[in-house]
Image 1 (cartoon, rainbow, N blue to C red):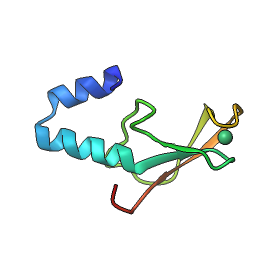
Image 2: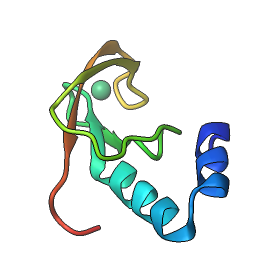
Image 3: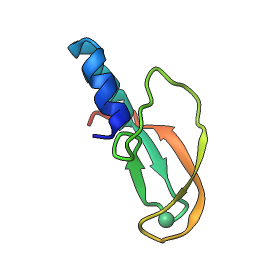
Image 4: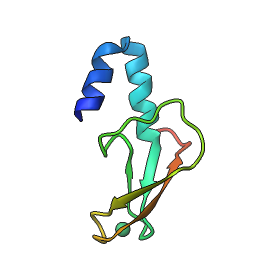
Length: 77
Ligand SMILES: [Zn+2]
């Protein structure tokens, strides 16, 4: 877990922390090459958020820095 994730997990009630993690795991960051990771895997938190923002990042698969698509998965984990 990243420092930010640790802090939130510690201060929030267990139920909320669990929900926050679950939500963050549903938010995916996808590269143009198709490689994707969850926001949670990237050490981030995305909770109770909407929309499809973009994030500039370096992809570990194709090693290119580009704008990644951020979207929320709806299927169960
Ligand atoms: Zn890529």
